[in-house]
Length: 336
Ligand SMILES: O=C(O)CCC(=O)C(=O)O
Ligand SMILES: [Fe+2]
Image (cartoon, rainbow, N blue to C red):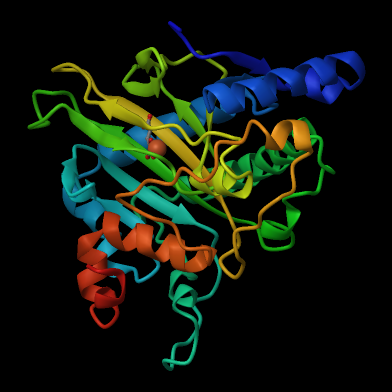
């Protein structure tokens, strides 16, 4: 396979035969590859171009302005991570990024609350780029809506009711957004933009600027998911894989650093589960259940059924500085 399949969401919206054929391809693609391009998602090009251009402005700010919203300030893992300060499987990733989440008040802690409650809290917004906050909020709302519709489509593709997964997002959907900059290889010490990994949530919707770098592991080897203007790259996370007993596939992917003198922006929206639930197991119809491969979570990073604890563990592993500063009391519980 030289490239990933493309699905046009307008086929789903149209209903009838077009919807039926969309759902058939969606089911097959998600089972075989776990990755595809989505067009026709309804997010206008001006909106995505606007966000990419704000991202470029942010990363071009003086380092001190960026570090004013350092992620280490935030027990909720929100804010700026400088180049080389995030880790995948213990190795440095050569990228800088800002992490945003759902903006909710922090939950006061007296040691009685479940651990995941420490993840809830406000975002950090850069004072030097006030336009970023409304643009990010708008993006979060749009991508949340697309994600919910896509999950309904996944449920239908699995011959389940459209709301089969809704317990994990209804009323309080949860997501993370990473605005990412990969410097060229003249700055990066390594070709690891981000190391090989699977995403932990339900679905990831990725916007790329014009520079390639994302690679997807398939049966035929690593395939480059070059940017296609107007599309998102969608992939399945480990939660959806587990929820479907491995029928849907969470596929390993990585990013190679751009060549010297070139950089790359990507904006990854991770649609996750509510923090206060457990990973559900849906009952597939027998003919689909027969094709499910069983749970396939990463043996180096096993999942908890409790979705909040799972997300906390992933964040602690990725951000050792936040972990040391705000979670030193509980790191031993995660083997860290
Ligand atoms: O930047 C990209 O293209 C993908 C990033 C990614 O896979 C991730 O952050 O999980
Ligand atoms: Fe990823």
